[in-house]
Image 1 (cartoon, rainbow, N blue to C red):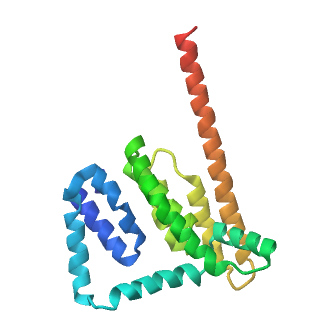
Image 2: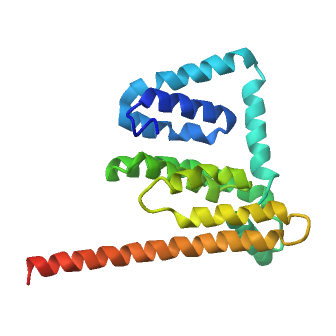
Length: 225
């Protein structure tokens, strides 16, 4: 909303507030910087400093790092790609790779950030699409995906001209992971959600390519009847 109304400072403050709750929204900052310049940085910086100063302590940053490491190595819930790789490696090696995959995924996500920033500048993505791709990458490479973690991508999915049905599908199925966690249908909802989301994503990508090919073919016929 703030970006669409060219209010970069407000968008920066909102991202800063979200980043203080969950760290990954800070990764959206470079998208704002490209669109609004440095004037979109200082409001968010003031929010971070203002809200963090009362809790400043020498142990704060080490504790944050410990929490991030704990999240990546020990916690796991409704993470389809993580579970798939974990089971493949277990079947292949007979060992439990759960404490290794999480840190690997984190490194892959961090390595993907410069690529996303360059693509955003090169292809001039909309802010919605840039955020959707970055947050989507984060979720795909997460070891824990609670249903409410999907709210940002679902919100972004319905704001564009063409809804991202794969995220909407995953969000709906993820509710089942909570409702049926104790009754044994937990895994069914995970594979149904992530498998269906993957199928919808591939179908959308394939259909988009078909539409582009037809459009180019029609233009070619018009130019060379």
